[in-house]
Image (tube, rainbow, N blue to C red; front, side, top):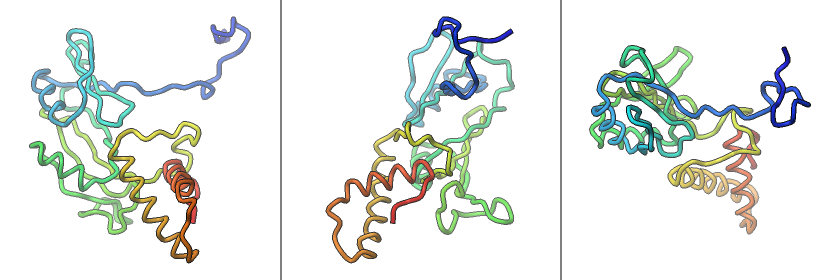
Length: 209
């Protein structure tokens, strides 16, 4: 039986990949909702309005939320693992520690696997840390400043928070300073250069020079 697009009156066949399918919520298993509410609120994640028996929190800048509650899952509390992406892993870890969260020391990817410390070049995707909620659900911190090609659609690029905008502008300013050194003259068209740099960095395309 063919599946048709009801909005088109049955005249078109829907194909996977031709319409948006956005991950909205991830469910995690917890044993004590009050304790989990306190923990995720302490992280600075926004608590959203939900039906009774369900809690939902959204990290700053995230398009995906986290839900928990006894009616949502029968999975073992503490069995979930997720990634939290940050643009400055040092600042993020310091903030979490300041909020009373136990955070693992930094590691980074190397030819020998994960090794101790930050990536020496602070390359995107390489530096990591992690923390756990009171039940043991694990959140892996990963520093990403520029995306791999094809990871983000250039036509829908979005920046989720003030801190990410500030970090992007600082990186663009540094790169633009190198651009002016190479050309030997001041660039009056710097706003357009910044814009091109930021979009290229976020979509993984070639950076302006």
